Image (cartoon, rainbow, N blue to C red; front, top):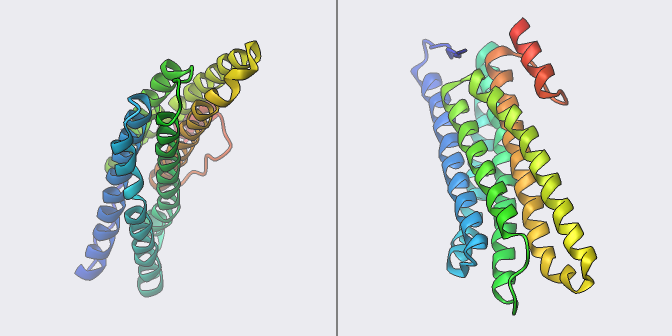
Length: 238
């Protein structure tokens, strides 16, 4: 298992700034993770109150994103970091954007939960939604743990899992499209589930992006746009 040892500096203020940056990032990650968990539960249980809780967190996520952006800018401007320090700042800057977008997708799912609650009949596709939701929640949890530990092995798990989620998403979409083709009256009822599945798939993509930042942070490797097998091979050769 690979670990990253961020340099300790003569300036205690510099050390504290880096520690604060990571702490703030992981705090945002925890908030977004709970937002996703609640969003999935709100739609699978058709829980309007829980959906409202998810939507109420949006401003807090946006505020924390701005704080993190400011911290990154201050460190770069004042400390001119190099090597692993610079990779940490850049990785967090990019990963923060992914966390904010994950929160946006959770918010969309919560809105779909409210829309479903207002329908006279429940749509088809809850089992697919529940299954994909569990997988995405697992992926997000592994991603954040990998970042907290600078753990490349766990990040590689996420890369594998993201491809699995993409396959599950494609299967669920095919089933729903077949359901809608059987009776056009099903189309409007199924759309809320389709958009929610799409949001879950996007959350998975963003989690995958964050795991790529972990590998970049620890190994200094840019693995974007590569398959899981290609990533594993590149990491093993490093």
